Length: 446
Image (tube, rainbow, N blue to C red):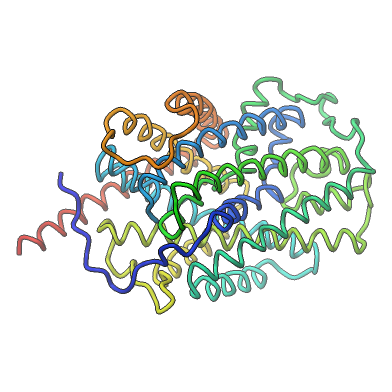
């Protein structure tokens, strides 16, 4: 099967060399930082506080290893297509397309999930309804992203830095209320509610603390010296998220109580206003909740950036209609931006605790294929220039694969019906691709 012939470019290319490593690292933190504000707390129900902490450590190790593999691939093949580009090189166009679409759909759904979490904090803080907040978010992100990569990532990086500062302020504020007894669940008063099974069940929610950080590698095509900037940026981003995530997982339940926050869409606010902590709103709780909104917006802006670049790349490489790779005067892919935002609006209608498991499953599937790509190209891609080589090499890839299989298993166990829908979507996407490719080949013959 021959690779699809890319259509002629509709407009200019992306902003090559626009991003230094600090901006790429900031992008990685900003993409995932919303996981520190919402979503992780559902793991308290699945495995108790102890189960969630162990799961967070395991997923932190996973991301340290996985981003090493991604960094080597991104440095060797810097492209806005990211996973799609690597997979096409190793296994052909079908795998490249499926992985690229998996990442695209996951990130587009994540836009809606983060919008829901942002609306929850906004409602708690100012009492405004969810949809007015979402309307402002979607409008603001579109306006900013249309200004181009340098402006979009620059603003997002600073917003991500503010979010980390807010998390630090939250932990300091909760420290006086922290007690070991608050970490125990009411069902049996145990740290590990369901033992080893609870750790297993907590893995997807712990992964949410870091989810998407590797997508900063999509900025490799627009970064300066990707062989040095991307590996450094990804490692610093993961370490930053690991430290911030463990701090939040420690201080939020210890100060506010496991039972008070485990099912909340706005767990930091729930912890601050818990009877064990401040018990009511005050200037500090409002300040931190406002900062949480900023942190969520950082991820919101970043996910829109990365998903639009993924869609742009799929179109540019001939997998999707050419009009999706159009760029404006600022070299921003405006058509792709409009499409991913539309998908995000639809995804925001669904419950976040269900949608986030689908996002985790889709991205984890793509991770699995990328790890296989890494191993294959180490063995059969010796002609590829490698400005950077992953620490641990194939051993790192095998170890992270073992952890990833546990995450995929946990998603299947907890949301089996939803994962079946994902399989159906894959089948439909494959069918579309085969029909689209046949149409392209017929056009070339005529």
